[in-house]
Image 1 (cartoon, rainbow, N blue to C red):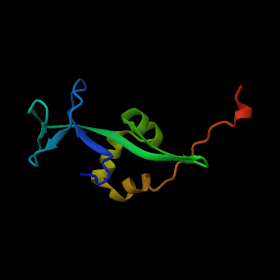
Image 2: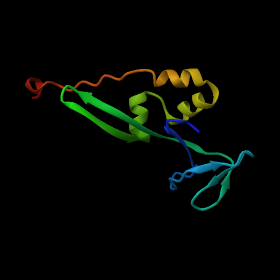
Image 3: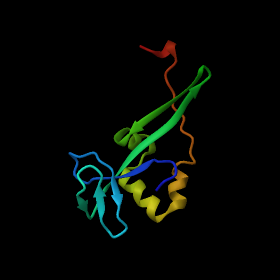
Image 4: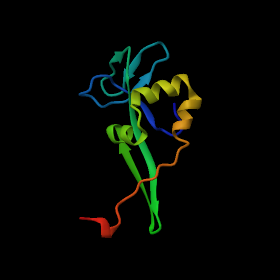
Length: 107
């Protein structure tokens, strides 16, 4: 799988947030209930460093927040991972600049 552990294959039933294993035969096995299914959902976990002149902090965000930050859904990102590795890598070659308002601009 992805060496950066950004994308995970997850059980397609939304009530179960469990990783599945690719059986290499077109089926995916749920690690929790041992059920085999023929599809999966991509799930996203991002870890990144936020820093400024006072220091840095490593943070982790999950599915919805990661999709907002990257500007792409986990399903789209998973498709790129499997079909266009160059475009997939280009998404992570970008530095993100977040700005917070200065204290004198807080109303």
